Every structure is written in structure tokens, then in C-alpha cells.
Amino acid sequence: MNKKIITKNKEAFFDYNILEQFETGIVLLGSEVKSIKLGHIQLKGAYCSVRNNEIWLLGANVSLYKPGKEFDTKRDRKLLAKKSEIGYLFGKTNKTNLTIVPTEIYLKYGKIKVEIALATGKKKYDKRESKKKQQTERELRRKYKNIKI
Image 1 (tube, rainbow, N blue to C red):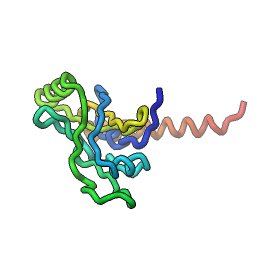
Image 2: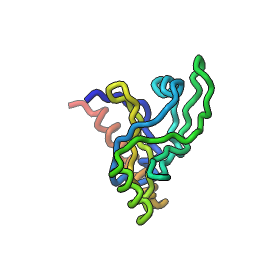
Image 3: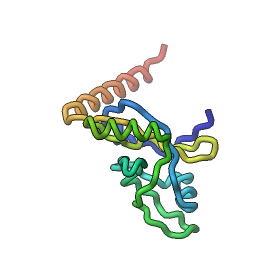
């Protein structure tokens, strides 16, 4: 598959338990496209919301592209998905305590795609537990890296 990752939302994997993932398109201005292709986008604190049978990306920060015209860097951006997926996400977020978070932005055949995920928030003790697990794995990798057979 022809997929080039532009940015990942590492905070989403730390703060949420990811249940399901979906691929969506995104509606952008021309200078936003240039800026995102250069990697000038931050997903920290970003989330998605379903309004009027449309999915919106909120809180994502796209830096200004210097040669292009100015735009609002924090504006809400519409995500493009199938009607059935939008209905499914709307039902899940309304009935249960689930959130839609963007996990990744990437290029696929020259088009910018946003991977969104249905997720549940982690409790504080879950975050501590995952951090401990990550540290032990890192220590093991370092230990075995230095051993020569």
C-alpha cells in the first residue's frame, strides 16, 4: 500500500483505549494541504464530533504556510466518511461513553487521509500501568541490544 505517515497522535494511545479505527478524508484549503504535506500539523488535544450527520475534526492545529494566504489555524475541519460509518459512530458516541479521536494523518495515493478511532478514556491507574509496561519493555530492549552472541 502506498501510505506515507505525516503525523501520529501519540497522546491518543496514552489517554484512550482504542476500540475501532476508520479511514476518512478531510476537507482542506489549498494552503492547508501544502502545510500538512510539509508536516506542520499537531493533533495533540484534537477530537472529533458528529454534527448534522457530518463528522468534524476539532482542535487540530495546522500551521500557516508562509507563501500561501492566511487561514484560521484552529478552525473546525469536515471529515469525509460513508453515511453508514457516520451513523454508526453517532450511535456509539451517543449511547455509550465513547469518544472519537484522530490517531493518524497520512498520505494515501497523494490524498490526505485522517485515521479516526472510537475510544474509551483510560483511568489514571491504567495510564500508570501502561507507562510502567512501556518502561520495562524499553529496558529489556536496551539490555538485549548490548548482549552479543
